[in-house]
Amino acid sequence: MLERSVRITGLIIAIVAWSSCGCRPGTPVAPSQGTAPATAVSQQAPRPVAPRSDYVGSRVCSECHREIADSYFQHPMGQSSAPIDEASAIEDYT
Image (tube, rainbow, N blue to C red; front, side):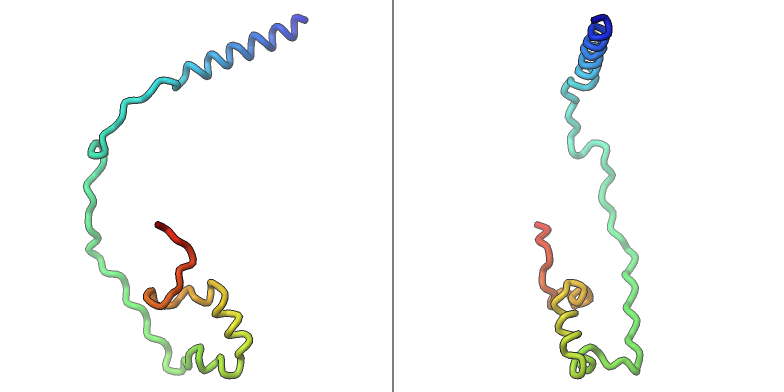
């Protein structure tokens, strides 16, 4: 009986302590306070390296390896290096 009373008392103390720690509404901060102004990045992105002169491209390889090429291009990894204007959207981030 004493053990049960101690447990209930401890539980009540824990609930009171938890409820008194942060249940008050905070002061809203205006969006302009505490934020630094946005700065433009002046460094240009590195230029891509030109392909090697002996690189024939995926179209030439797909002539002999049609099943592998079709499987690869249907997978999202096969579209990971497509130019942005040609790429199909995988996820909608709006």
